[in-house]
Amino acid sequence: ITRVKPDSPAEKAGLKESHVIVLINDQPPTLDCLAELEGSIQMTVLEQPKQQPTPPMAVAEPDLVPQETAVAGRSGQTSARNDLQSEQELKRKKMRMAGILIFVIGVLVFLFLSILIGIIMMVIGLLIAIGGCRCNRPSHV
Image (cartoon, rainbow, N blue to C red):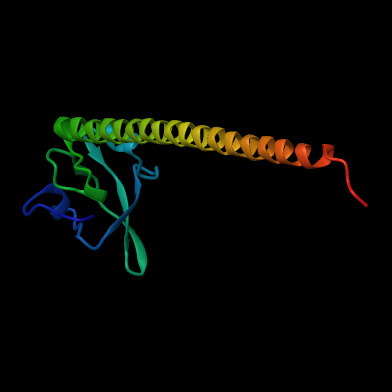
């Protein structure tokens, strides 16, 4: 938990900024789980060095902010869904950028190899032409 609003259900339940949410309604916290929260919830938090369940509390406003994700009531569901959609959009953008980068590298490698193969062929052609002239001359012994 990175922030607890004063006079919020979270503060009244005894949550503190140093707590780590381990379970929400007996499930590990995930973005999907956070997006589906309604009514009252049961959380298990890690308080150094022991785990401690909180009493049930109403989820009414964004007063719990685990990992910068606000979750509470309807607005919290929207926020969690928006965060999930933003995360998915970021992954899609990263994949697109990786694809473009791989394509550009492929083009550069193709051009480099084409030039390299062309140079090698020119050198081989010159060596054969020069060597062919020397091999055809009669030797004087």
